Amino acid sequence: MSGHANGTDRGHLREPRDGGGLSTGEVARRLGVAPTTVRSWDRRYGLGPPGHSDGRHRRWTAADVARLERMCALAATGVPPAEAARQARGETSPQPQPQPPSPEREGGTAPAAGSLATPPHRGRSKAGSGLRLGDVRRECRGVARAALRLDAAALDALMAAAIEEHGLVTAWSEVIMPALQAAGSKWEGSGERYVEVEHFLSWHVSGALRRHVPPAAPGRSGAVTVLACVPGEHHTLPLEVLVAALAERGLPVRMFGGALPVESLVSAVRRTGPAAVGLWSQSRGTASRPLAQHVAAMEWGVRGARRKPVVLTLGPGWAGRPVPGLPHPHGLAEAVAVVEDVVRR
Image (cartoon, rainbow, N blue to C red; front, side):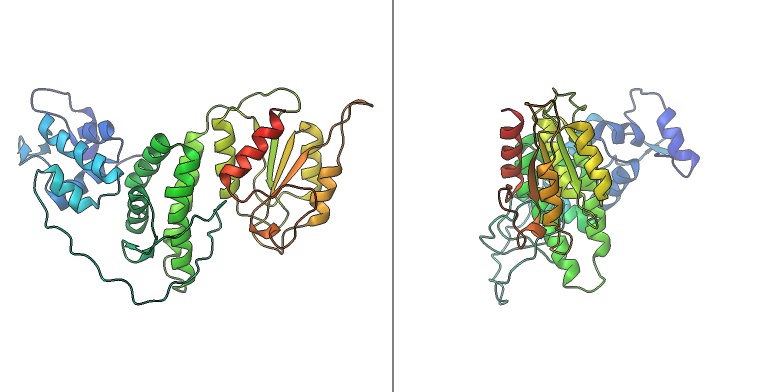
C-alpha cells in the first residue's frame, strides 16, 4: 500500500500532464521511488524546480527529471547521495584527502546469519557511521549507506541494480553479503544499538531475492531440490538466496523455510522425490547428523529402480559436525554447482 496522508499528494497523481511539466507523483513513478523520497532530495540537495506552479504544486521539467535520473545512476554505483547530487547539478567537489590507516588492530569478523560464504578482507574501510566493509565493491558501500539511513527506496534500487548488472551469485557474495556481515558485526559490538539496521537490511534483501525469482519451474520427475532449515533453526535468508540462484538457472525448488519439524521434512521428501535436499544449520546446536543420515538413506520408486536424494549440509553449524559422504558446500557458488550437477545427471 502506498496511500498518502493528505489531499495535496493525491491531487498530484490526478493532475494532467501538460506543458508545465510533471507532478512530484509522476516523477516518483518514473524513477521507481516514493514521492516522499523525491521531496527529500529536493529539500536536501536542491534538485527540484525553482518554484511552485500556480502557487501550489511543483512541476518538474525534463531538465529537472534528468538531474534526478543522473543522481540515481550515480548513487547506484555507491557514490554518496550528497556527492551524487553535486555531480548531477554539474558542480565539482573537492578532492578527498587520503585517510590515515586505522590504528586499531585487524580483527576477525563473524559471518552474518545470512552468509553462505565469507569473502577475503584485503583491506579496511568505513561507510556511513562506521560499518567495517573491507575491500569491497562500490555498490556494497552504497547498500551499507542506504541501510544505515534506513532509506528503503535507495536500498531496493541499489540491490536490484547490482543483481541486474553482476548476476545473483556475484551480487550476493560481493555486494549484499558483506553489508549483512558488517551490519551483524556492528550490532554484536554495540550492545542493542544498530539492531534496526540489521533487521531492516535483512528484510529488504529478502524482498529483493523474491522479486528476482522467476516463476516456479515445473521440472521433470526426480529433478526437484528440497530446501529447509533443520528443527530449531530459523535463519532462512541463506536458503532464500539459494532458491533464487537455482531458480535463475531453471532448476525447480521446493522451499520449506525455517525450523521444519522432522516428520514434516520426511513427508516433504517422500512426496516430492527430490534429487537433492539442502539442510541449513546456522549453529552447532541445531546440526543433527542422525537427521541428515536418515534423509540421505530414504528411498522411493519401484523395486529395482529405487533412488535416494543427495543431502547437502549447508551452513556453519555443520562445520563442527561433518557427515561422512555428504557434501558440505562452502559458499553460494559451490552449493549451486553441486545441486546443478546432481539435478542434471
